[in-house]
Length: 335
Image (cartoon, rainbow, N blue to C red; front, side, top):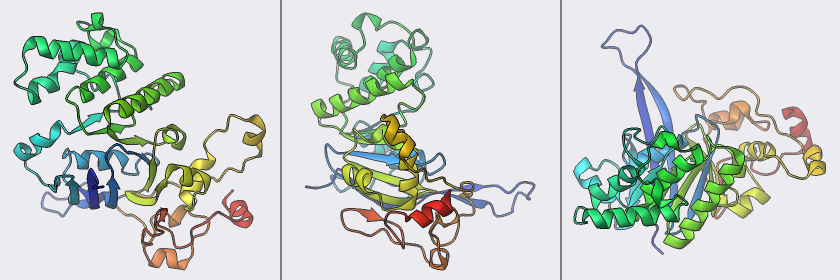
């Protein structure tokens, strides 16, 4: 099967002026995404996780052309989306839609719910009549759990969970093949998070969508993802089937993230060993040499500073010179 989208060595670099520097001085470079590669199959959900500042949202914006990037992001028809002009990219805007992190901030407060959801149809389906647009909007509202009689209300009249449902309806109204969800539940209460995640799972099965589901919490993507990609400082640390990654994480960073996930069983929660992440996240303007995680890794050695680890391992990819579960001695040293 041909991947829906294939990313190869995707990089995003921003120029940052030096404080107090002269106007003609060379700016510093911030490496937000550093050579990310993956394939996404039709109908698959790829969870993308990592700490704040790991480059998850920048990766998403690079895929849809909101930030300049280098490398390749090849759509199923063979078109490389990186560097496409706005006119040529318009064809793919209805194929790739995005659900944003802040549900209320992503909605225009001057527009009604009906106008917000209908806007992509007006842009990409110009042949539809007003009656057809209104019918499709009401059908989509019903599908995401909104009442049709709410069509003339404004975003401030809805709760956070309802606003996110509006954002989901807006993204799905043009029948995309890929929806990128950029931390869509991080601003919601825990109970509402579960509702939105279940809704996305149901819509994916019903509509045959492919999803890229971004979160900073591994527990959020556990039940919706087919595969999970773990990012740190713009690079991929681990990429594997969700079941395999949760059962046997190989990268020390993934193990640390999983150790922070609460376990509903009080006995198991008390017995588990936390793996603290020492130190601060390094600056993306001056990333560590070799393995970018080495400054916080309990098993870092001289080789980690001298040589960048390749992403290897077949179906369970790991970017680590010494993958595998941390030993009791390493756990003791870490915490």
